[in-house]
Image (cartoon, rainbow, N blue to C red; front, side, top):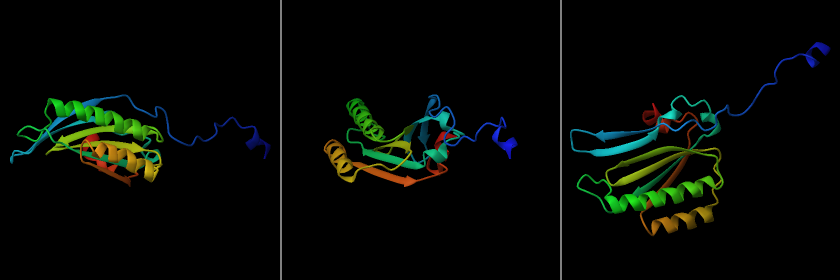
Length: 159
């Protein structure tokens, strides 16, 4: 009995392991096929084999519809500037109440997807509606969230 009380074993640790946020290793990749489909992704590959996935199980995808595009449905310069502003605003909104991991963005076929993983779904419905209504005035937007414990939704992107 006393042997267990005075043993020098380390107590079990629970929760995520360090580092909580891996380094940034963003990689830009082109997406294309034989039918002329074109796009690109900018993904943080540091999340490949990330050990803390289960602590950030909520996948969040925000899709913005592009308006000013070229013949491949990619954003023109003015559109890119607006997208950067909207992305910053969206990321700040999500960060307000969540531990957030920004995985990256995918731009294709006239849309841009912003991909995040968060710890808990702490979105206040009224506040979220008000925020995205303001975004909607500039660009059509779609907000999706689902539980994805093993990060299957991004497995093809981060590996």
